[in-house]
Image (cartoon, rainbow, N blue to C red; front, side, top):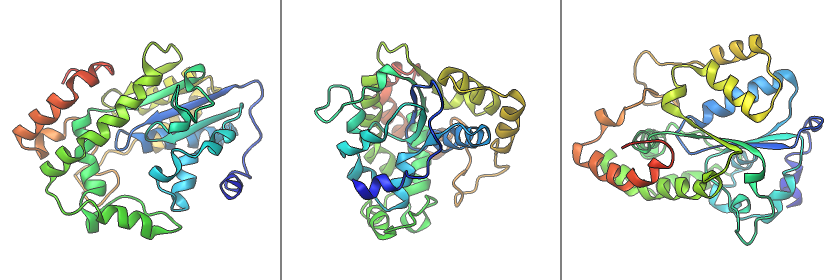
Length: 271
């Protein structure tokens, strides 16, 4: 764990009289937007943020290989905003054997999205192998490319059905910190897509981060990117809510909707 800790040796000092907070999401739910907005704003006001998943990804350490590392919880100290999580690590899962920090005790945001749109977006990001638009880690890229190749070649409908359970499990795990928790606020991608400024302000207020309205507007405008046309090679391919209706067969939409319906009611979705 010494080498991993070294990745976080250049952090800003902790923010005075601030506990700790978290920004959670899932892949392709607007998580990159959430990270960019919060990190850009916080950097400008010198509020310290830590992105553990990004730092480890850059080292070629994939999610499945660090989620159960107990030593990472030692990095979670007061005075910082922790962001970049696309699923709930085991060491932050309440009642898990290796858990020693309960995120339910701290302010947190969770950004979610219609799972059908998430899965369609994930297909274009990671499901097409050679045409993937996903970022490649700086170190040990072969591990990521190997994982990408292991998915095989599937059409979009097969891919969405195949990977539905993976996304389901991530959202199911988050219920352990969402259920009856007054410290967490759920944001829906469909609500924030058209108003990044309000999204940023609401997150800052909820997380207790000092607000500069003029700066928040400037940052939100920088990241308010809406492609004029779909670009399947770009990380921001299209972005519009409801894209699954154009991309998936009706029977696929029905299958995935039935699978997620009860779960997503917990997040305010009626599929």
